[in-house]
Amino acid sequence: TQLLEQSPQFLSIQEGENLTVYCNSSSVFSSLQWYRQEPGEGPVLLVTVVTGGEVKKLKRLTFQFGDARKDSSLHITAAQPGDTGLYLCAGEGTYKYIFGTGTRLKVLA
Amino acid sequence: SAVISQKPSRDICQRGTSLTIQCQVDSQVTMMFWYRQQPGQSLTLIATANQGSEATYESGFVIDKFPISRPNLTFSTLTVSNMSPEDSSIYLCSVWLPNTEAFFGQGTRLTVV
Image 1 (tube, rainbow over the protein chains, first blue to last red):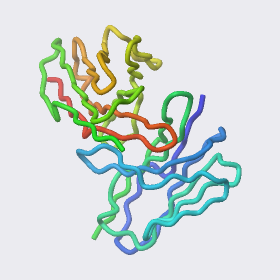
Image 2 (image 1 turned 90 degrees about the horizontal axis):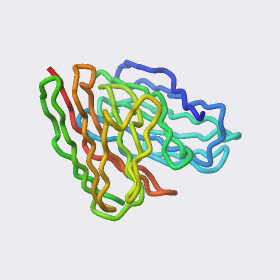
Image 3 (image 1 turned 180 degrees about the horizontal axis):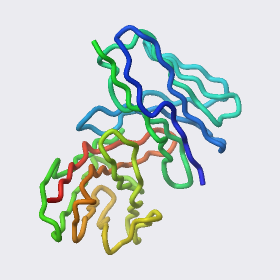
Image 4 (image 1 turned 180 degrees about the vertical axis):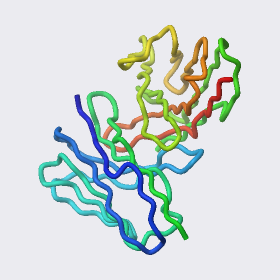
């Protein structure tokens, strides 16, 4: 069974701080994705990482795919209240998406 | 991309009754997915709805409790049957375009009283 474990589960930080969210699996994925979900909405794709070791940047967000394609990380620099939400990593399983356990981020002004 | 319309957006239901949630996609897709989500937590896959065949249910979910219809490639319904307070949750439909991304409806927030 393919599982994606995220850590931490919950993070509350002050505006301006940096943070890193981890997504780990014992399985190899051809790609991993990161989604952000805000209350009352469905998850929305942030990025897809495909190549082992790949690093992608989206403004203050930096995503990395592990060399062995079993893990990924999301680093946020100078977090802002608008970054508040639920962050989910996801990978393609057999005919379905496997979603991570989720990280709830709250950024305080 | 895909745009998904899901309704109702929320409902409060009496225990023992049933609620049918509708999901309409603006393009034809092979597979549609139904998820359950507790607020602030990750998604739990209920079943995969395939057009022209019975839905495939995940462990812990059964057809009698969560019957699904998939009459065509753009529409699906999920019914939550004989509801109890434990069924209170957010229900999301989703489509997955392989090698791209998953798209979601806005969700149905169900409260069973």
